[in-house]
Image (cartoon, chains in turn orange, purple):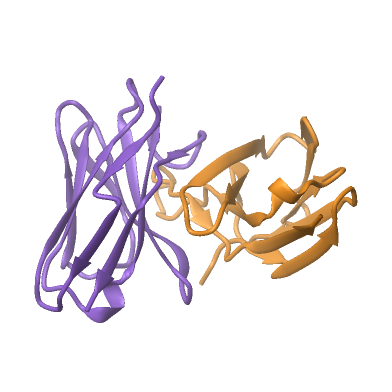
Length: 116
Length: 114
């Protein structure tokens, strides 16, 4: 099963509005990352937030992390048509008992459509 | 620095054939991870190579294999192709092993199995 689950699955807004996407995960993590993907192309890294951080900003992006609720949110302010893409959260879940092996596990993504 | 490159970008094969995909990581990166992306299953981790050694492996059959060369370039091989192997295959490079740092993705190879 997916470690990260994004919500909503799809979001449609008007240019200039803010877009908020949420991500929930199941196990302890070291960090959580957000990626963007335009129409079946490669993923572009947006932001990484570590488990000891609560909020991080990068340009029009704001990410929060609540480890007690095992959830994160990505806020895009003043959205533009060029922000239309799928957004994925990814976590580095520990997946072996020794705790030395990590892999990046992705959710199924939120499809954001920004209408001009 | 140049980004992650993948070749070929598009590929059409028939069932039963085999295919080899190539990934060149960002200069200086020693970790290369491979992912399969399909509409139904989303992004799934295939395996990771670090300094020519497979470090981690996802839940894929043995038909999926890979290797990494001393210059960190990686190849992924799928033997006896099945229709369900049609997907976008993405590789990502990172400076350290696992998902503890940012992974930089290539544009992907889109494989269609007929």
